[in-house]
Image (tube, rainbow, N blue to C red; front, top):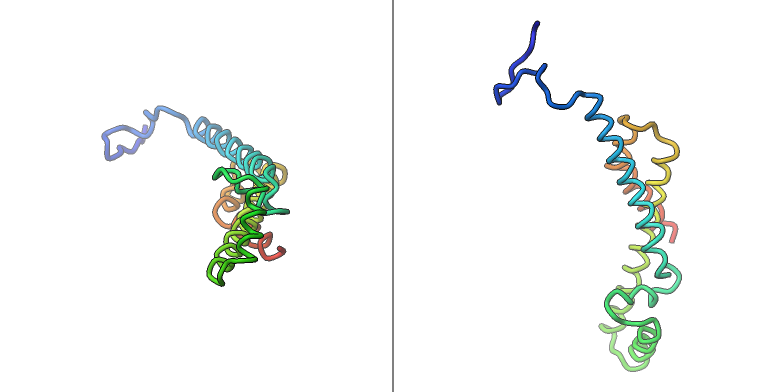
Length: 141
């Protein structure tokens, strides 16, 4: 039988895993990745409530929402323009990240529900469409 020889000296007919096994494994890993993405981006990240009130999301650095509100009030009263701008940027970045995570989570749910598993269209979503969905969510803010 005609078999090609790879650079490692192994014949193509001697492969350890069949093409179907590799594709099945890839589909399983891809599905798991989309599930984890949906859970993390839509569940864990959004559960902090940073989209509605940015102060809720600073708990990951040890600042409670109450402390954040106190800091914000203090900066608004006594801070200079640089401090106010820095605070505004921190809040805008936090909300932008929340919107991006919503887009990525929604893209993962979309891929799980509507795209054919193991096809090019599912692979393309990972590369480009998630960014487009995320950018649309940020633009809608």
